[in-house]
Image 1: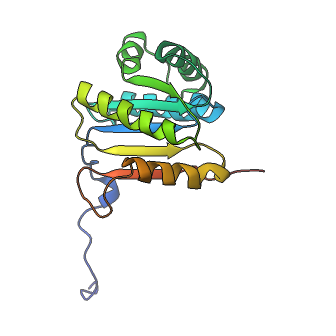
Image 2: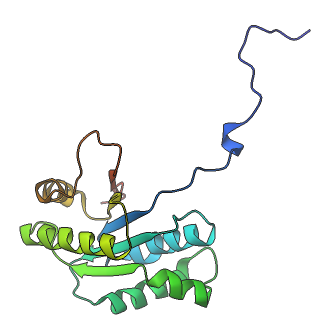
Length: 177
């Protein structure tokens, strides 16, 4: 007879379906960089193909290199073609790319964060997003403080402890150097 004093496991939570992802805005600091082109945008594209992106979203790259939204889309498309684990599907890419945007600015410039706030709010209104935001810092560690302070000063960092809308700041782990 098996012991009965321990917890009984009837299901495996790892096999449960993932909860639906809420609509959100993803801002990638370092959006014109190699990591965004080779890893981050292809990963987001793969989330779409895997059915793991929310039904409504915006991806906004922010970097020092001046370029238009169309130039950004072209640059990251090349990254998806070369580095995605799944093949590019033209119709899917066309729909996906309409959610990709770009703006130039410096991580240490106050006006960048004022313009970023305007652009994020404009895109959230256009796509009817609830204000959920993820800021991905694909930048040198020396810029982390400037960006976090800029997000806070501009009001983009959200309200501490608020459940909705949510704000998350993801710091890319420095590798090398």
